[in-house]
Image (cartoon, rainbow, N blue to C red; front, side, top):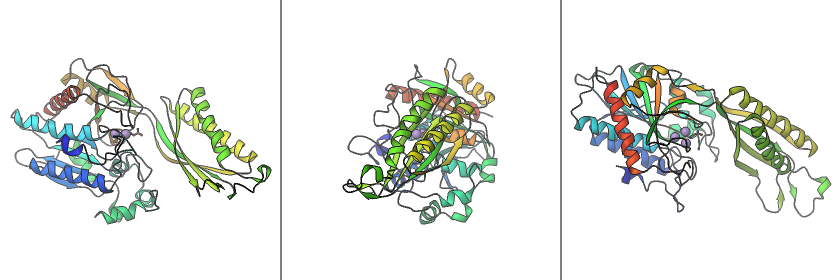
Length: 393
Ligand code: GLV
Ligand code: MN
Ligand code: MN
Ligand code: MN
């Protein structure tokens, strides 16, 4: 099962690029449907591009379902495990339950949520946000990819009705909880499997610097309104603000217009990712960066605008479900995470929990992300135990 997914979207450096509804991600979706049909699961495609495969209990009851899974899309050049490990482990856990003769008292669903990384349309966890009503459908429809294509247009091209995007109360009402297994994205986990306590506040902002395009060889320094200069200072200011507030701030994506070696740019866009354990500190970090960006931009005759693209406050996974996981996994450590997940978004509507599988490199969103085979198997065993417990009666 894992072997079939491994080559999909892998680049020469071993990094994966699986962007929503592009070739490799469509191949991942086809893989999901194939795995579902091999197991005789009932497939459901919701109105938001999320996929579900259901194992129904004898009698076919649909309510009280226990959902597990993760996502199949990736960041640009990401690791093999972020997302797919949760989906593959979900199918493997289902196989283990069946092999052990488990008869679920309620449905077990495997989910693959759409656009979790926001790598194509900019808002992370877009599929689960739409499902949960955490983003307005009008806003989602208007999100654009790097080529200017709207989410509505891409959704329509992939068989969805853009007017039907939005919360799915029927589906949510059928699900009693969601348990997502994920590769750990730092080095905090010293044993094969742990249980998540919380997701720190995090968000994305867009900074647009607008100056004046001109000739690199004929425009004297005093005559320039070069947006690259305030951006450079702002990148350093972001690091300083993060240091000051004990947060994290990253500028990992730029768009330079027009992008000529011999042209002063007319505009530069930078995307800021800011996170931290305390909401006010994250807000203060972004406020400082904006203040510094405005001051330096003014000195260079450049305009600057900052827009919030998404923000997710702290998510504390509900204690009841977490305790239930811990009872099924005696001795498992608990840990918070700085990474966002669909489980964090769905937590506003249904009880959610997460299992983390050790990552010996501590690297994620990069090719060196890793999980040892033995740890991945321990993750499947843990998920199997949790699903057995949650669907016993
Ligand atoms: C998604 O993985 C995120 O935390 O940005
Ligand atoms: Mn990720
Ligand atoms: Mn992920
Ligand atoms: Mn994530």
